[in-house]
Image 1: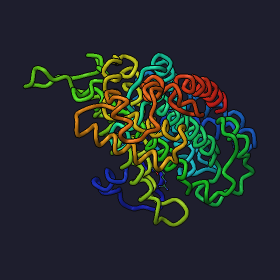
Image 2: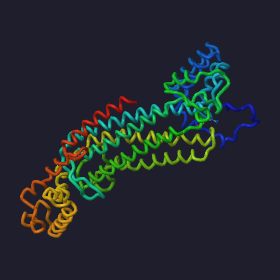
Image 3: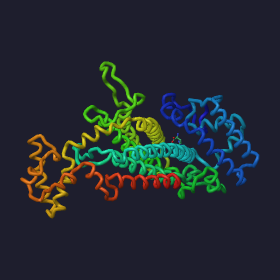
Image 4: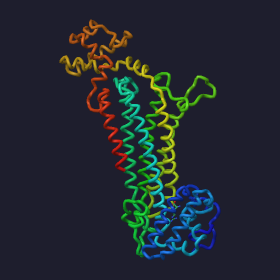
Length: 463
Ligand code: ARG
């Protein structure tokens, strides 16, 4: 296929260099956006009288035919083309001759590629946001169901204080709500049109950049033509937002992996979301959660590679920037794929309440409540803390829990203890009294759920 830039060259590109230089392998996935951008550009050229209305009409009609044929699989994208922009223009020109040759007036491939990727990623963000919103809905359903299911809360992976499973789930809800917001914000900043920046300096033709931006659904234009073709912030922001989504999914996956181990057995994953071992017949492995955790690494890699590509290149376009696409495509593909399996895995898991409850009975997770009790009897917290620590030490030595000690035994540590202590360290009571805003009590979790439902709706409507 003839290059777009043949005029000043006397030799064809070396075959291996041709391969090295080409991006068609990965940018052909933007063919619809490339055509959409060209249709808008042709419409603008026609409106401004830079080409005739008939030519504009013919270009748009033919471009739409090309798109329909690629969609239908009747026109194959030529793998020998340098990139998707060259392919579409060559195909157009092959069909309509000189009218096709006029399309590139007042634009450059630099602004084409910048437009295409914004249009393409904008759609990917919309899909990923829908998937995150569905995950948020699922977590809300689960949290409602488990609002009063007691489990230990952990710090340092050591049992720490009593919470409910609903409360723990709502922590993830908050992370994914922030992800929704972040991605919406990223989309907003991405949604400006670089089209008409041309190679870098704008053009002397009487173009209307606002008009083509509007046709493409952009909220505005890039205000500096050099920045228009040099800026890849939106790609970095998206890769970063997706890295954060993956980090959240990965932490959640890690807990799911722990929870379905025999040591915890807080949950059981559905057979449709688990795998077996080739040798150990008893095994049921959480491969899906492990893969989500593992794939987080590659999305981070995508982010770091884009950041590194961009860090040393002078203005304006440099070919290095062709390396921006594979990473961000991979980040989108990976995050989307993970979300598609993660939500149904969560929705189908079985919660084993009694194991959560019995884990909460061990490990002295009501020790803070015992200290708090002494505070209500007039002791300073630090003193109450020390006495309770000594009691825990005694329990550990004697193989007992706080509930199992007698009042007499308690009184050997401090005479402020009374019979009402046992009510105060009862697990249900310990959870129910944590009613501070955002706390573990079912009543507080209910409020959190109500807040999150409103927030979810607001975030969906906002962007
Ligand atoms: N394939 C190129 C890319 O992805 C398109 C832009 C080419 N521009 C240029 N001046 N060579 O970045």
